[in-house]
Image (cartoon, rainbow, N blue to C red):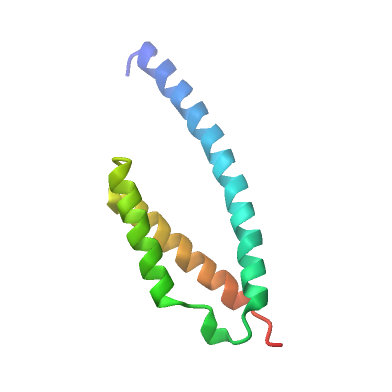
Length: 96
């Protein structure tokens, strides 16, 4: 890699790091909302709503196509995020 390309790479990595910091803040906000949602659920079986998950993934696919983002990338990200939050809800569910 040329010195010029290394400099470009470093600048891009700095931009990616800044973007990652923004994503962390958004994940924190999302987690707080998920906690509120979880507080409304009375039964553990309410944690997974397959119909809602299907709608979310369909919407993400459509938005990805509209914004010219590879839908496989966003689908993979959202499926993993959904799985992570389902796990979070199961670990934090408190029967009333």
